[in-house]
Picture 1 (tube, helix red, strand yellow):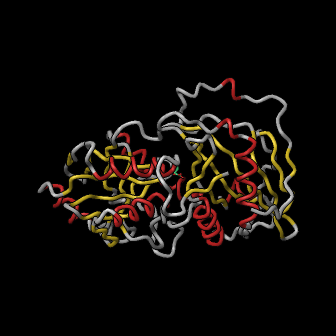
Picture 2 (cartoon, helix red, strand yellow):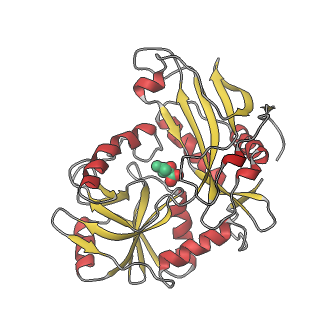
Picture 3 (tube, protein in one colour):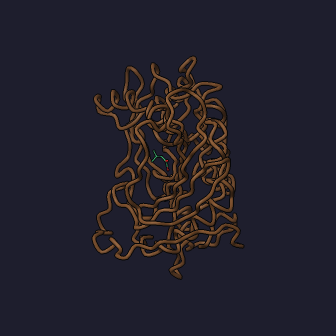
Length: 354
Ligand code: COI
């Protein structure tokens, strides 16, 4: 890759890495030494720099604090058997970040600043990429509005940051999920397809109500009729029915998941019939009742492949068999892990080596 932006790098004098217990990492609680930053002002992204992961300072009037104009991404880096740092499909995250940005009236970032910022950051913090089983370096690029202004209009000033966290599993056990038929995550014409901060804030209260009833997460249904299944909590959702893999089509209301796309690609290569379509709650409940659904799982960068052991509607709980070594979700998870960690040949062009 040719250097087309100038990044000022200010390494920390003392790394914090010695304080980290890599055998017991809690997801999202441990932060690597550095972050990449760029500021948008006078109509362009500038001041590319890498500095200590540390406090930020901006005024109480900053737009992000009031109006939520912010978008983010999540991707992961791994170590391959030669010890190189490899990243899974970063160009997809770059594209999706900009799709989210356009929807939220945020200026798009350039491919150079995204990729070169990421590359330099990972070079500097390569020791933070864990290589124990089921661990990775979670990467969080995000953009937020910084105008000091009370009033609704797009900001003129923004910050783009990439920081990283060594992580273990996001979910430590199979999930119990409840089909949500009152609250909505997304509607046609809304922001559901975008990784916009507010989408996640709006999901907290319905999820909290479900958690009070003993479920881990929700299955979101369409915002008009609540008859069609869309996503599960922070993930896309898939069902195995015989040799058919079912998942909701993407569109305005369903995030175009990169893990989702990778799983569907592998499933097709393995000769599984993939159906991306409207999936009704009635269809899923009747297939659960007659035992046709053998697997249900969520897919996401943080969650990877998250088995679902129970689905509830307003009346009943339905158990789903725990996946065994021959289950599709187990095998596709292993396949993806082997590709991501460079143990298996990358035939799809999914791996970016730093
Ligand atoms: C991801 O899967 O990377 C996400 O951004 C979901 C997040 C809520 C952890």
